View 1 (tube, rainbow, N blue to C red):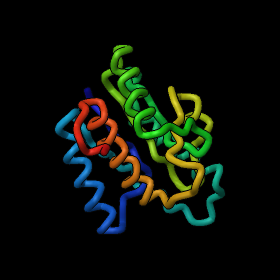
View 2: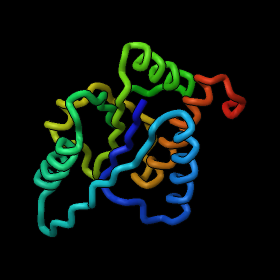
View 3: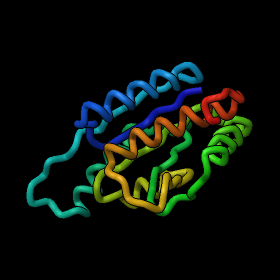
View 4: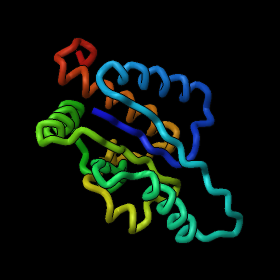
Length: 155
């Protein structure tokens, strides 16, 4: 199984990046896991629709046709940790082996990216910074694998 976290912008907070790397390494025990960063677009004076479109093009360019694309999205389905692990298991049992979780830019996703998504997942109805969402997501992904393997981390 291959899982990619595709994110717009790099993590600039050293403490958060350390946690992301820590959980990323742990996830690597369960699957081939990598994080791919799309550089922030610094387009002064550009309206948000143009910025979203350009970020969307960069996201779409990094997606393969055989990948299950899951957007981390405010309007996505909110799952418990056990529900998230069950959803991953359901996808795997259904024959999926390549997953891409996408964290977009500050203004969200373009219509093209929304149209390509197979699933939308919300981590919470609360608002978090994109940097913090990365930490929360990788921790939850690690937790999902430990739940699937009935390991003690979840308890």
